[in-house]
Length: 212
Image (cartoon, rainbow, N blue to C red):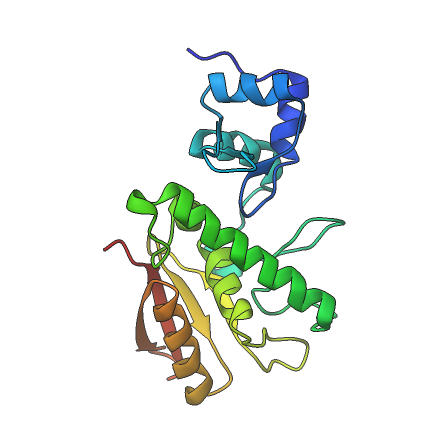
């Protein structure tokens, strides 16, 4: 069995970029993580190091809080220096220039992660990271395309987990907004279907990462 990472290596893993898995550390630390197959060195300059799926799992062991029930999922939080996609329902949403730059950078990082980890380097369908972070991935695709997350006024999209494997629910203020969200997610490599709540008659989207 592979030995667990040292405390110093764990700190490097925990400090990885939450979207791309990009690592920063000493050459010896990064080389040790590569040897343990927890990281890989990108073949192209500047030859940065990134977490492998195994490295992401170790990071999430300490970074992920205890999960709540899918229907009562808490909105993603932002802490100092850590990017979090807006899933809708957060307080005090900032949509200024700095947030736009952060979202653009996160989306470009996610496309790069797709290129590095998907077979044949394709970027038109979600990667493994997105399949284990469905709500954040779908929300990032929507926010990066300019859709507005729901705030205190309730206007905008909301992305939530569902009991179904590899599927998220997306709700919007009206049918037009839902169609626009569906088009964005399809362009980002998701399969999308429109459904109706049996009890309320409200329309919503069910979206899953496309595999082919």
